[in-house]
Length: 178
Image 1 (spheres, rainbow, N blue to C red):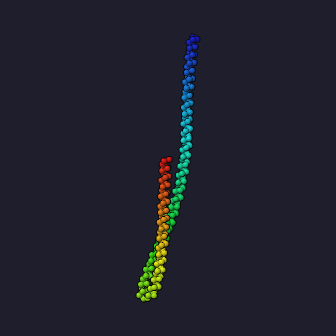
Image 2 (image 1 turned 45 degrees about the vertical axis):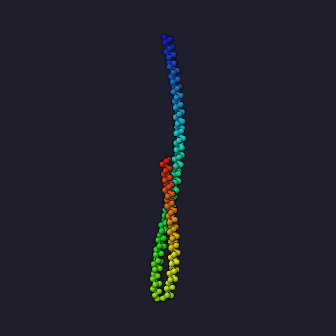
Image 3 (image 1 turned 120 degrees about the horizontal axis):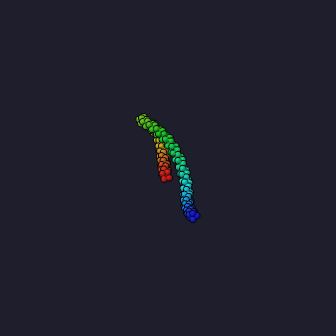
């Protein structure tokens, strides 16, 4: 009976040793897996941190571009208002020129009537007419100059609008890639 008990104890001890070895191997495997998972988590954490930095940079860039676009839009609006004002001034100058042209026509009619009555009056009215013509020429030169200035400003406004559109497209393309 003692021999049977000893063999039973030996079998239990052997089973216990086998279980300890299995447990050690499992613990070693579990530890390796834990280290791998911890390494993966560390890499993911660094990636998340990098993504947060990238997002912040993109947000800053977008804010800057929005501020630039807003500024350009305000400038374009102000220049558009100035262009409208200059257009009104040009229209006013045009009306004045038409009025002066009408007046010159009237003076010319008067000169024709005066030619029938007196050469002296014709010379005097012709001198007045020449003076008026010079004023008209000067005014036409001023109107042309103002027209050129309006055209230059219009070109600049168009250029600013194109730049604004390019920056918006650049912003949108960066946003889509992000």
